[in-house]
Image 1 (tube, rainbow, N blue to C red):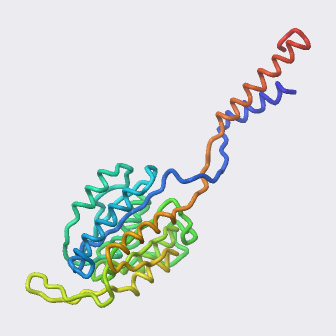
Image 2 (cartoon, one colour; image 1 turned 135 degrees about the vertical axis):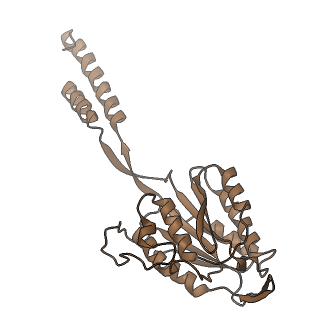
Image 3 (cartoon, one colour; image 1 turned 90 degrees about the vertical axis):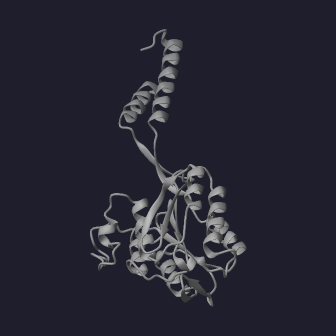
Length: 281
C-alpha cells in the first residue's frame, strides 16, 4: 500500500501540479506618476509643489519593502516613463531627482503610460491614444481585459498632480480604462484650492487645485483622493498609501513536495518489506 501511494505521488509530480495559496505579494508594482507641469512651480507648498512632491516620493520609495518594484512616470504636455519598474532604489531616487518643470498637463496620458508599464504589450495606447484622439472601444464588453475594479492588488498607480489637465486624453476616460484593468489609481492633490498667481516668463496665471477631477479619477478606480496642503501632510499621505497593497493569490508548483513525499513513502515501504519479508519487493 505504501509503495502504491509512493508511485501515485511520483506520477502526480510528473504533471507538475500547482495549488493556489494566498501569500504576501512578492511582485508588487507601484507606478508614481508625477506632474512636472509649470503650475508645479507654485509655492503654496514650500519650497514649491514639485520639490515637495519629490521629497515625499523619495521618502515613499525609501520606506517600501525590497520586493516592491517602483516605476516613475513624468508628465507635462505629454507623459513618458522615466524609470521602468525596478527594485533598485538608487535608480528610482535618481529618476525622481532629475524631474524638471515643463509646459502643459496631460493627466490622462500619465494614467495610460502607467497602465502600459504595468501591462506591457496590451495595446492600451491604441484604446486611448496619447495625442487626445477619440478613444477606441472604450465601452465595456470590448476585447480588452475586463476585471473587477480594484481586482489587481499587486499593482497600483499613485498620481501626484494639481489636477488641472489641459492636454492629452480625457483623464476620466483613462480612469475608466484603469478600472477595466482592475488597477486602483490613488490621486494626491498638490497645492491649495485657492492656489496662487504664478509669474512665468512675463505671463501671469492663477494655479489652483482641481479636486473634482482628482476625486472622479479615484472614484472610477476604487482608489482614494487625498489633498496635501503642505509638505508634512504630503509625507503622511504617502505613508498611508503604502499600507494599501494587499496579499494576493498565487499559483505555487508543488512538484518538489510530491516528489519528496513519494520518495519518503517508497523508503518506508522498502524498510517495512525488509523487516517483514526480508526483501524490498
